[in-house]
Image (tube, rainbow, N blue to C red; front, side, top):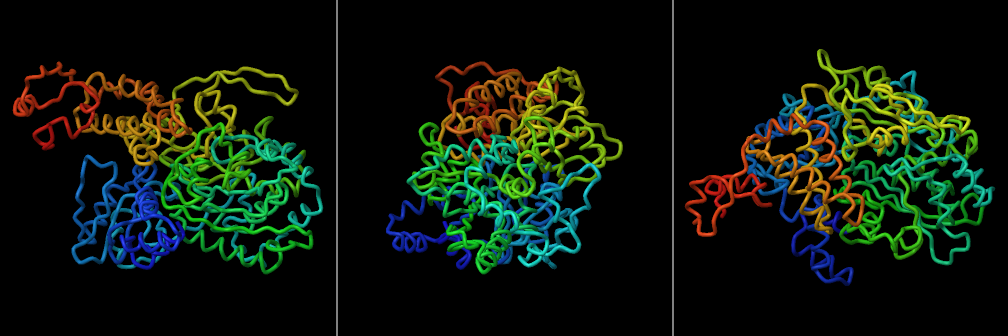
Length: 629
């Protein structure tokens, strides 16, 4: 993948010549390269324009006007987009003069500043459709200044984000007490560091919420194989945009957390797997690594401890599935990101190169530094029982002040987050629903009542009935409410939103991002997208809501990795929570089956196709118009 990135950056696309040349250099067959090139969306096999525009189309950006932005860009650049309804995504469109090219892409991890786009390697935030022409004529990246901390925040990880006196170089970091925790850690025993992380109760901040110290303890103290640590910086979950800011504005905090973790795990090599859409972030981290190496914080015999460790950056190429830890490992090994079957391929046993491997999220690794500074017991006093420490929640969608907030876990309710910290709903609008943990989390209705069991400090448990505004923002409460905390991406939906349109946008994301390894996911995700496509176009049939629910039920729990649940849960929950809206888009009766003697001409006359998987494809609704029988 590094060679593929280099070739494309130099020549603009990956030609057959490039595939053959790289294959020869790596002693591989061209087909081995071709399967990688065609798997990852960022790799192109045809030339793009001199300036390439990527417009985010996922939910938060779509709600903010990214589809209108696409139209304005095309008009300003003289591009005629050819839309193929049979494709989940349309290929790159190039202007007649070759100066510009454009494509829709999935989440760019800046949902709080939607709509966003990238022009070449530069991110542009809050790009209003009417400003598209101006950006093309003056394409300087304009990143907004981060907001000041809210009084309800408790910043540990984000304490340096947005500081006026803050610089990202290593000298500023050291002046602020940076790398002191690494100096302390190398004087501790490895088991003591692992125990401190266990005592802290730190749970993974990437989505699953698995206890970090427990995961670390899976590595045997006397392990004979090499041990690897991977920082998962493939921030791709729509609604989530926390890791981007850590990487861009406090890279040494992440690096220190990685180095402490490597020492605790006796891992001599760490990889930071970073999204391909974060090119500037990758450069920032490369510079941070070299600066740390120059001061002996990594490399040979770090800080005179006798411990050697190296950290490497590995860029992905636009595949959401690489957020799944075994898919990430496959990608890091230079293959398609097909998740592995667990068991036997638990990363802590058989991970990278079939060696023990720990994969942790960027935010999780940053917390390690603060646990060493505070001590595990003191860190555990932050937050709630079994939901300790702080975590970063990202709010986007229909609120006045979208953005990120670092809170003690469970110390802030959903209502406080939406109405106080994020400024409430837009003028004249009412809350309709909330997706509390990234787009894969089940949606919660604003008018629901929830019965939640809550663990108290004395160990007892009480049950309370509460509204959505009263739900504490912690792992266990959101799970008890029927959803999940996930990656911390809170997407707010007001009463102007069509829930079928919302689900269709989410379905398109998962249909595009399925790795294709498992049949239920590969076929089901696309099928659900086609049904909601057709419902929006006015062709929905009465059976569609039930069919959607059935498809989702037959995906969840039947795939190798959790992507099956990720694509099924939105459909299951939206159809269940908003039945009237889905019924309103599904009014046509189901046509009776056709006898086998019907001719293609008679099919055209009837205009509809009998109920079958193909009938849910909007391209088949009018066979004559689609040109396919």
